[in-house]
Image (cartoon, rainbow, N blue to C red; front, top):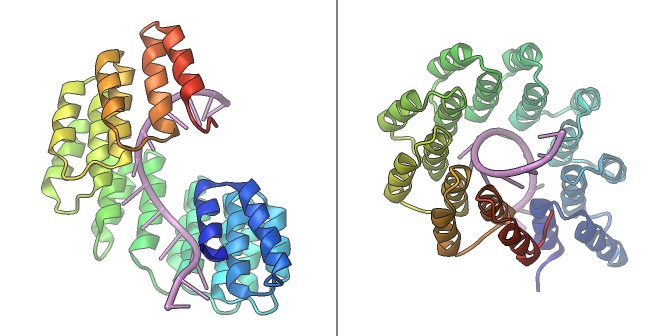
Amino acid sequence: AETFAEKLRSCTKARNLWHGKEIHNSIVQSRLQSDRFLANLLVDMYGKCGCLDAAISIFQAIANPNVFSWNIIISACSQNGKLDLATQYFHKMNKRDGTSWTTLVSAFAHAGHLQLAMKIFNLMPMRDAVSWNSLIWAFADNDELDEAWRMIQAMPAPDIVSWTVIIQALIDAGDVVQAREIFDNTTQRSSVTWSLLVTGYAQGGQTDKAKVVFDRMPQHGLTSWNSMLAGYSQAGNLHESRRAFDGMRERDVASWTGIMTAYARAGHLEGAEKIFSAMPGKD
RNA sequence: UGCUGUACUGACU
């Protein structure tokens, strides 16, 4: 039997609020609502599903919140756009760890407050790769590639995510050539960077190069298939879109939307409609 | 022990 924890985890991952509430009910009925571990998971679930009020009330009912509880509520506030509240919780806790700091940096970074994010980053007692990457991402995402580049040079040990962020920024800027060069010159590759290159080539109209990269990548995950499919679909290539879609052994909403778009772009509106009705779990 | 922070794909916005 799956435990409450496992069930909650999958709800959180799938952002399934409805099922999450059911599990919450079962937890209450089993009189486990004061279990701190489960409460932490509930706060996280409600926060990620957009119910900040519910997250807060569960957090407040925790008798002795631990560092996880605090970090989760800070994260919940920032994911729901409440930076002021997140900051208040941050100040209220008395044993902050690196994650508490990084959560706050990330909150301001995602809100586009680069200078504030940097200020908090500079105040951190300890910085790890995740905190560096959060800030590098913020600069890269705001087209401040020079600053992002300065930071990756300054950080002690750039990791896979650091390079992914830079590669993504170059692709967003339309510079696939430079992105490819960095990809080729680093050993820090992952399925994420491989997929990014596929997307980068496809977005530049180079579906042939995208396909070469796709064929060369060591493992084909759901996202890499979706990237390739999106490339064909955007290029108006219904035949290859169909082949890609049929070749997938698992599909998600992005896959279904991709194939549907391919039909629509090719002018096959009936085909698109058929796909739409055959599609499981429309969102 | 298990719970929290950073990166990739579609459409909408």
